[in-house]
Image 1 (tube, rainbow, N blue to C red):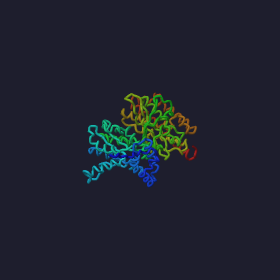
Image 2 (cartoon, rainbow, N blue to C red):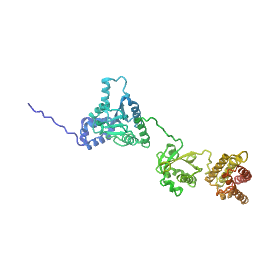
Image 3 (cartoon, one colour):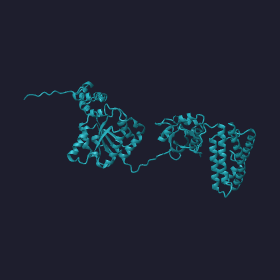
Image 4 (spheres, helix red, strand yellow):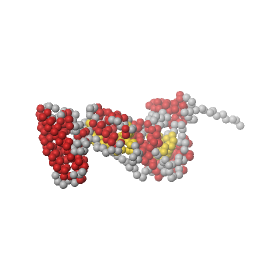
Length: 501
């Protein structure tokens, strides 16, 4: 009996040998637009010493020429809703560059042998095989048929990926493959591999790097689909909002120390407000353009510092009253709306700040400073007249009314401080010499009723809830308020008519 000698052909060991295969060379000749990708894939397969680089590269050619990845998505019928949601997310994020085949889209007339033939064809052509295992209580024998089909024809350029519930143990036959637990960090890694990193299949460039700023949210969506939570609560903040962390906030020394606070999170409204597309690292970076608009007005930053310092020392605070202007001339006021801390009395981990548009605030940049100061003085004098004096000087006054009146006076005072006109000297300087002396006497009279030490007659009456004394004092102050309004109005008319600011 004659012996039969068969020639054993060794696989290519060099890129030029691999590209010299007749079928590959013909494909390369007719698809010059994918030449760089095909050569990169060949280089990868040779370097990784693929057992059959010719077969591996031939399988990659259609995807490399179409700049896409062919995927077969396997799942159990009862998990079809989750499968549809995950496939929809992946298709959207990849701009359809992930060419996904899955059973939900098979036409109704495919059944029996035709159905099996369709699965075999799709699995054979796939670069990736994604297996969905969302239920930790199921047994997974059903998945082994399709998994076996893919494994039987897979090559070095292929990937088998198992998306599974964190409590699901990956079946033994596929435990060596790429397992992705349905947690945000794990799904983020998967999305980075699939969309952002080079070589999702050998030779192919990144699918869609633009998703990176929002990758955490996309990962959460996939996790929610796989883990099917009973209830998803979405906390959506409509105001511009940032979350900052201040290291050693209990030991803040001055208002500029907040500049190095780290931005933990910021919603799109806040980033747009400050002119950013992506979140900056520090508070100073975030507000830098606002600072440039009016570098001399740091009142809002100083007030914010005092609010944060009082919060971190467990003290009552009054909201920030000062405002800032952005590039489109809109005016905003910062509000410290919440904190995160460890336990009821633990250290503060983060401060939440929103920014509220102040539609009633005057843009004073182009108004002469002294004139603006006088306008502000008049404004607060009017507020005191109608928010306090006229409101509480007559009628029956209750203890609750005393508290309301005290709060109104505190608000007016805090607002006045933020506008820089609460100091006696700043107000007196707005008047001519003869009137200035009279205003100074008014201040002397005012301090008898109310002062910083809290020892004035009105201070004590408020503390004692002495409504009769309070109303007597308010009527006395009404006369002083009327005189001052007349003087300030005359001075305003004089400054405007003579252009003396």
